Image (cartoon, rainbow, N blue to C red):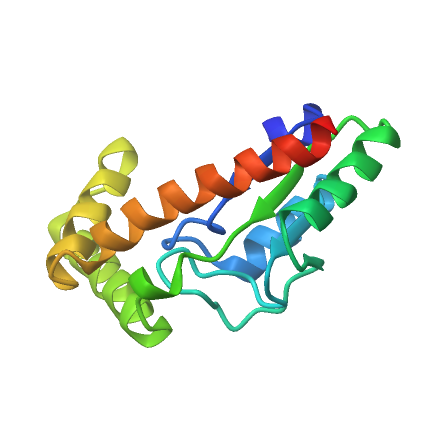
Length: 159
């Protein structure tokens, strides 16, 4: 809920792979947090470039996203903006593979009785196992890409 109270731009690769994208977008909408996707009209699926869910708003590049962020901040609504950037194509997992790995890991966690604060790290480790490390490579790539887009966004906002 911090994004609902803090006028900031947060750059990410979309909702965590273990979350429901549609429900996450609905929740952010109820909090008054706009979501913009850079470079495509579909919400990224974290490990995959797409999720099958249309983006609420999109911008062709970081400079255009900065315009959306700047306008939102000028309105002084008090909330931040979530800027979603798809994982680079070279490191992306196909959506079916990513979803399958997440579903399998969640089922395995249920059988193993893993829950609470241990759940997310356990799931990430299991997803890495299931994908043969491809999820880790995607995660590393998206971190670097998010930082690059965030830097371009910051430069555009500062000018």
